[in-house]
Image 1 (cartoon, rainbow, N blue to C red):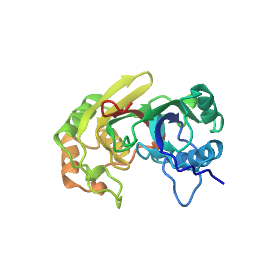
Image 2 (image 1 turned 90 degrees about the vertical axis):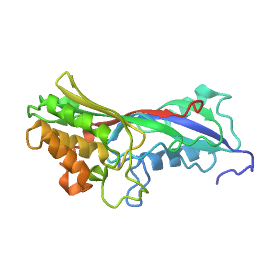
Image 3 (image 1 turned 180 degrees about the vertical axis):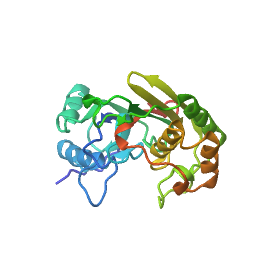
Image 4 (image 1 turned 45 degrees about the vertical axis):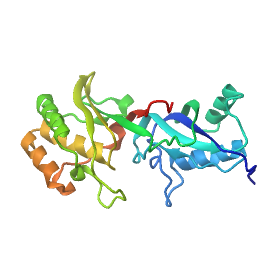
Length: 259
């Protein structure tokens, strides 16, 4: 039984992070209870005494991680700021060990975790030497890769806005247009990291881009091939989808004043 006081609703942003290995992504799905959204809805409804429906800043695929993720919820009869530390403790204690909350932020009523965001930044990690401690945290790719050619391909992303070729088929979106704001590969200890920033991303987009660029790094594709793939607007023309374990949502930026 949930309370319904008919009071004016207060909206909060919840800042969280999670290791996605054991979950089928953020968004609730009919065929599995193992999603971040469903777990948080059920457990927060219990401790808050009213039915909660958390709205996320996006959806992550099965096995994908998030170092920074925002979701919003609304409450009718409770001010979480009155005892902030108590609620931070409660919000964390009821969650599994691989999901954690970093902040509770009161926002104006029209602030929306998804639609108020102006950019998202993802990073993709791959490592060259086998490392047991990177299991499910990075993509093991023992091949030597041509970093220069991969960065040439990354630079080409700025010349396009339609990324149908890197989108999962039959998704329920109105447009496949995205504005790329940053894209670069860098060398890190025992591997590489790809950082990409855009106003929005399509389902499977980053992993498809990374997989195609890895094929460029292996010499299987050229930068010219990469451009032709984008222009074709054909997912079957692109490379493989890189494994989910290497992908992290790193940062979500909002319109000024939201946070």
